[in-house]
Length: 515
Ligand SMILES: *Cc1c(COP(=O)(O)O)cnc(C)c1O
Image (cartoon, rainbow, N blue to C red):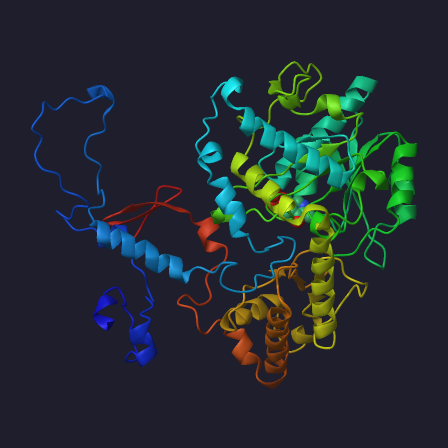
């Protein structure tokens, strides 16, 4: 089989039996590098009808310089080999903190592929889109129930766009009262998207320092909460995985000065079905369907960041809203003069709505089990690793737990090294160096979909790494040892973008050639 690995330019050792049974390319060539004059992906018999092009000649492109010529089988094998170098939640534990990398149930996928949903055309008129609109309307009803808030928009394409929508609604409501105010308060434990969203919506950001417990300091809040503050953006539970247990007092302080309480609900996974944000005094909150409600992340699919609001903010929801009319039919309402406008084409990332509703429906009124499992699993990991890794904030965890590399750093090993070494043990690394208030952070979020044995295996790997750091730090410092690509220049690809491949070299963003 080793002849198949024609692209293996660096076969230093003879292949083992395992290598021969499972040939893994060490260096996959670029698809362009496989190009060869005259190779074709398909060949058709000569035309026996007149050659007419539907595209006017002036719009047709001529020869493309250096165009890849390659066979179909080479393309198929190239991408199949690349896919085997990937890591996914379908392979093993993916403890990437803050991202809620839970299993994506296949039932959701089946529902999203039903032709009535998958093939519905975004420009189809309302009269033939009853089912499409009803599903989105039903998802809104369920999210209203879970958040305890009055209305929901499904338009935002991600959590960050949901934040922007939420803050723009706050701004619209304050403008209606006569003064949009100037400032948004954000704790130092917040996700980086929060200050970006507030800034985008035209606000100055004032950072609030967390207390020794890792939560919001009420005295600090009281001092900062003036009548010039539009909103407090609070992540609940926060990025340390700690619940803001004084949320009711926080809401009272913010409301007393006429401000709004924005909840970054990306971590809703830890209390969905257990407690309602609306009952906590929260005025507006975004959720991430691709976190809490199990829709695929990143390469697996687009995001979706619905936003729930109180009655007071509802007139400002993005337009159009989806309404059920008195006769029971469903339609879009564009006649919303106080709306912040449209954020997204059509209804949003519709396939995610189908998946999320399928997921929620499969739990029904037992959805709180999701949160219970997530919290239990994070605390199991905290207990399993607390003797081996430093915990700056040693409070009970919600959905995730943030360790630091403080002990390992004494041996010269840092969080990034530990993450790389985990890859040798078959795990995706945790989130590292975030949140910023924990130096050398290792942020671990197992989610509820890991079994006890999966958690034990992860804990065992982390303990083994801690032992390696004590006994022979070089093993960890030189990790990963088992991946085809070892340490990469982590900023090189961003600083030196290669946008175009040419037969005689690669072209970088500033037009330079590299060979
Ligand atoms: C993931 C996350 C976001 C941003 O969500 P995106 O969908 O990635 O834009 C915001 N806040 C927190 C706390 C998050 O975990």
